[in-house]
Picture 1 (cartoon, rainbow, N blue to C red):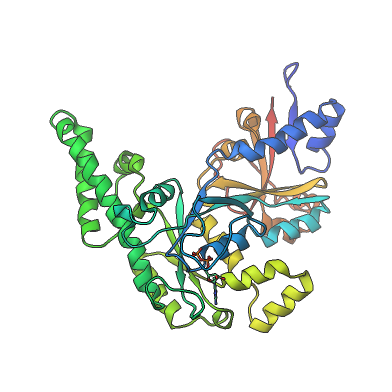
Picture 2: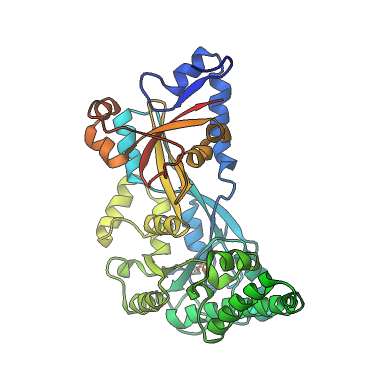
Length: 409
Ligand code: GDP
């Protein structure tokens, strides 16, 4: 039995013992509900960020503006149009949310979110401080993953900094700058380690790892391709090596090439494959136009292009996965909501995404995969079929789990 002053809460989907009804009985409904809502904003302290990089005039700002729809960043046909990094929070599109909302007849649907940063101004020579080079490289150091936009559209009205469209050459220009910046970091660090190495075994281990990375970088490769032990990875993390960050290439095409791509896209796909990176085809301009249209017009426009979307949704989803992020759901009459957790998190940790109290006071979770719940048709039916599982502290939450947490505070 619960000790005096300790309440057990199910959050928030059980129809019979719902979070809201219990709290309402205790007269604390508002306070706790609000806390749980508020908490979500800062509860993923490491709200992971993806940085949008690429040469000037490849479509970064157009993409960023489309991403945040009404963001302030100005897209213009001018190389240094965005000087401060722009940070935008976007909803992660997820069809399962609508399905769960229907199932629970939820009053509200709340998607999960992630951040994009528009990092403009990278040019050849950035690592030497050309343009506003070093500042931009420092901005990239702050992000957790890189969305590398390459221009795969031809348009004589849009100036190309190198005079012609050549996405692989462009990508290599940027990658070289990132690599040179990493090399400078590594040299500085190794210089500092020299003295410590005489007495410290850790310093020797770190230096050996850096030496391996240095060799790869000097050969034109990226730090992310170097295999490191957990210990080594932890040691070099503070350096924030740019080429160690996971990367996705976004091939920006004209509307005519959105459905089938073009030769430029194929070249980028080949480059990405060599690096073990993913490629997403987008049309920043199509996305920018879609923002202006109503529901019906959007559909007509996309149908006319022979596509389901302009690439933005795919890009957000791919970046989300690239960051190692996963989604679980809570669903009930009040709301159906997606929550972000990191791959490998246990049930209490995932509960902590909603509120620290839920992690501290975690007792157990009831869970069912989203697909399974949809198949059952309702929570009651899922329970009758014995499909709801009771999981303890060790349970590693899976992508798409619908969760209900029992906790005491
Ligand atoms: P950034 O410097 O990389 O941020 O590039 P912008 O987003 O400012 O785009 C530069 C110019 O290219 C703008 O005039 C955009 O309208 C134009 N642009 C962006 N994407 C496309 C596209 O897919 N097709 C065409 N034709 N123009 C585009």
